[in-house]
Amino acid sequence: MRSSSEEIAEAGYDEIAVPYQAWISSVGDDPRLGFLNDVLTRLPDQPVALDLGCGAGLPCTALLAEHGDTTGVDISAAQVELARHNVPKARFLKSSMRTLAFPAESFDLVTAFYSIPHLPRTDHAELFQRIAGWLRPGGILLATLGHKEIDEVADFFGAPMLTSSYGPKINSSLLRDAGLTVLTDQVLSWCEGYVTYQWVIAGKPG
Ligand SMILES: C[S@@+](CC[C@H](N)C(=O)[O-])C[C@H]1O[C@@H](n2cnc3c(N)ncnc32)[C@H](O)[C@@H]1O
Image 1 (cartoon, helix red, strand yellow):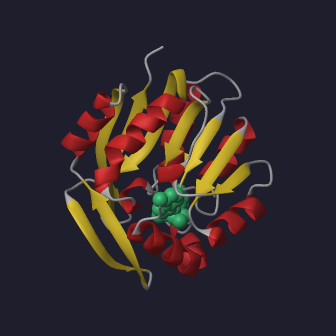
Image 2 (image 1 turned 180 degrees about the horizontal axis):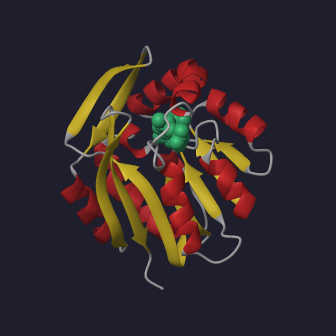
């Protein structure tokens, strides 16, 4: 069953897909590609990748698809439509990351840029467990998580949106509870301090 937060995210991103993409692609100091290029050097050639909450697919799903077999998932039909247009090499599923199912050990890399905090924080532990199951031994999760305790619906580009997270300490301990090794754990701010996230790179032991 869908939760109300999923209905909020779906409706909100259907509405703001285009202005969100215009804004995010104008942010010059966004660290996504730096982190993504870093983890790609740690993985086998042609990694099989899953991008959770892929949005319009730019630039991250597109970079993943240049390197290997890539699946993007997003709850918003408008975002999935943009992503299919922008990244024809990848496959896209319209689904909530909460209800996805994949066979065990399907992916070398799971990424989630700015998407997990739209899911209620009470669902994060289970999501991390499922991601750990989807990763192959030696695989990597690269994710942005909330940098502080928060659980509120607020205006985002004119649409209501849930932001829900624990702080970095609990986030990292949930990842460890899921059997992942936290390799990088950094809280970063950019866009003149307007955007702050905890960046994590977590590995599945080989
Ligand atoms: C802030 S945008 C980030 C998009 C993209 N990852 C990027 O880096 O630009 C968050 C994305 O997560 C998606 N999303 C939110 N909740 C989701 C859920 N439960 N399952 C899958 N996607 C979700 C939204 O539709 C939106 O496209």
